[in-house]
Amino acid sequence: MKEMVYLKNVVTLQLNTEKCNGCGMCVKVCPHNVFEISGGKARVINRDLCMECGACALNCAKKALSVNSGLGCGCATGIIEGFFNGTEPSCGGTGEKAACC
Image (cartoon, rainbow, N blue to C red; front, side, top):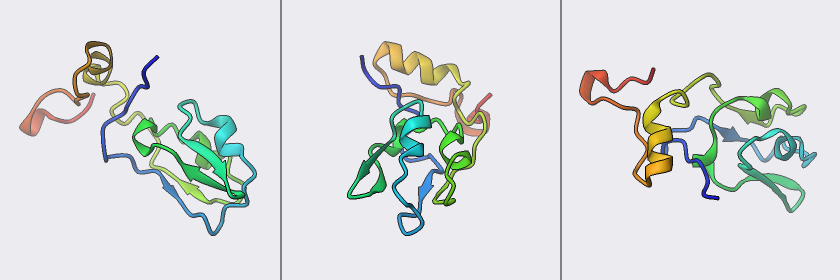
């Protein structure tokens, strides 16, 4: 099955590897497999898969992760339509109407 991609290069996810202790909680709670543990630290495999749910940041005891969580563009039909139709995901609308939801 192909992976559901959010929108390219818009995700607010940040990982501070200096704070990370490699506990793997981010790997366990991430619904889209954005992380892996490599060399004793978390690593972002594909940032564009992040749906900004915030589970990783909320469960990181070392506060090594941050993300502006919320609905983001996850509720936009353009994301889902793009996934199933094989087209680029979009927020829907253009210009001033490009805002999601």
